[in-house]
Length: 307
Image 1 (spheres, rainbow, N blue to C red):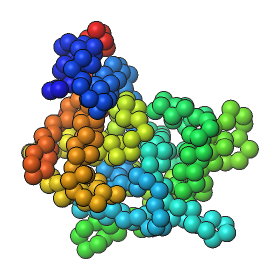
Image 2: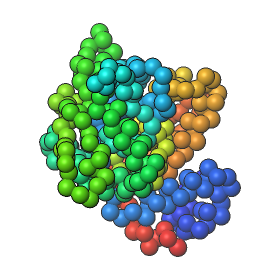
Image 3: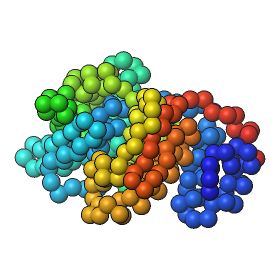
């Protein structure tokens, strides 16, 4: 389709929709349009370690998850219940959305104490999660897993520990109160783990909430967007990233590089649709990252793109 953002700005979203041939093309157009139309883009935050590694995308049989990124390794371990049973590892888009909320609130307020209650429910709703029924059960399950697990980050140089067996939170995230209009009977606040909060405070990555909303519950594409938001604006020259390197970071669950490459390219299309200033070129040996403006900037007025 060419530059979808230019088509939308110059010819209007209906023209871009006409040019969208496949379901994937249509998803890219709608994501780009949603981001360009949002004049009040808000900023969220995540720890830079999650731009180089990631949580599982699907339910895991194992209780330990290890991922390697650029000069960084993350080891995530499941917690256990009172009965000594594994709680399981957090995974998927719901776990990511919960963690993004906690991290964003901590950075904005300069405190590791986070108020849950209505604020978290509203934030999840703004990202397109209609709270209730199946969604409630899935969010609650991921909250339990996040509350129980521990994590360690290692730097490549001499296997130095950056975060020593920290966790995400001290205590537990009580979703019953988060999803209720009634006064909380139990915990209505949660403390980010001190080690995790320190790492987040020292190395935050700003993200566009409009971009996250446009991506929706697509965990792999959330990871690609976060990665681009972290790497592109800091570059001073073009950098090539090989397909094997991308596979090592993002390819969990793929038995073959060829299949991963096709799906990653589609995910990259959507991530770039919500990051209009991203400069990335797909080549035979891998992709080329080029210095780009940050992902969170003011957009053109919507009158120009809703024609």
